[in-house]
Length: 112
Image (cartoon, rainbow, N blue to C red; front, side):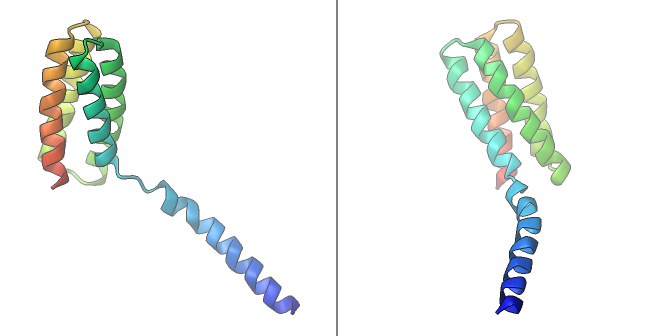
């Protein structure tokens, strides 16, 4: 009986040790796309500051996706996210939104 409990506890301990690695595996490209869509939505509403916040989050995930697997579409999406952030910080929501839309096009192409 105690041997069974020991094996059960050992198995649960091993599962707990390896589970965080599996849980941390993210879909960075998917997250970048999600935040880029949020940035576009806020940019169309004229909220340049919120656009910058989401574009920066998208950029973080796009950079991580590029490090995981290099792709020319991801790289181009990163370029446009940087431009969107730059324009958004100048309070030019319209121009920032155009760059975010271009970034979205490239990030979605990288996903395929």
